[in-house]
Length: 168
Image 1 (cartoon, one colour):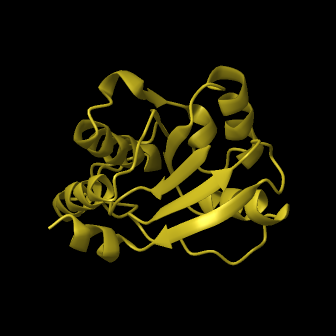
Image 2 (spheres, one colour):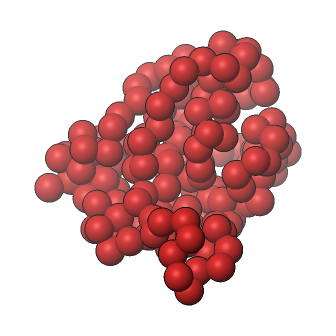
């Protein structure tokens, strides 16, 4: 299995007037434009995606929608509350193994620091490795048998500028 982990793109700042709840912060215009370039860059890497799972927060959902559109995966795009900030990282692994065991190429779209903790746990069995996921950054893990423990090998971790450059 290939597990792709994508941090949402650039969003409006917390405390922006008119946006009362953190979960409602949308992507900025710049964030949406950069994310479209990132999604094109992902496409040029010949990624094969079977499923896109996103946090329900607006900025993550918008990020995931851009990717799902680029990969023509609207029917395989689902919102999952296990990807909200602060949700136990093991919850999304349990969801995947229970609901999507037949999927081999899954993209998760969410937030920091949860994504870094998840990557760390899957790589080392401990959630304290120092991993930096930039907004729009993408990680690829190769997994033989998915478990909320050391089960993955790091294939790559790309910065958003690298992906955007590919998408130009």
